[in-house]
Image (cartoon, rainbow, N blue to C red; front, top):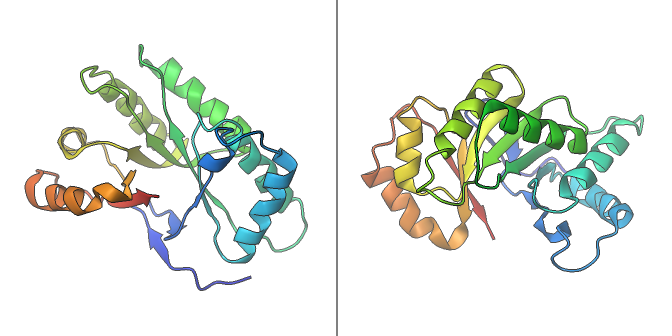
Length: 206
């Protein structure tokens, strides 16, 4: 197994590979997915030192496949490397009370076969619906309770990132399409009034 893959430490202390294994490909959008073959294929990535997997609650069986592999790895009896599972919470528009948020996280934990979530990346469809702040407030509370290690965003713009961090919500990262990075990094670090204490990593999806 290789240990040469560079790592980065997020705000909450979670160390992840700089290259993430994206699991959107097993969402089913490309055709029928064999869970058995998908689990088998994941071993090659881990053997290469690529132990960080990125998925979402809307990526079909992605969380379940991760859970099957995670359980298999732990049950192998060998000195298995620790995995890092980054998932996304992508709720449909609607009330964002704590019960709704907690139920979604419990579902992800059950699928991924974990007692706590390494990282939850929150996505919101419509900025005109300000209930994303309610959801993030509950996610932040659940992070404090140990349900989530890292609280992150996906596809949020800098205006909303500024709004969120100024409310005292600690955001570890924001995952955005790589084609947006030249513009986004300029706006994020030069124009947006993000608190200097906010260490927000940018994750680029390809």
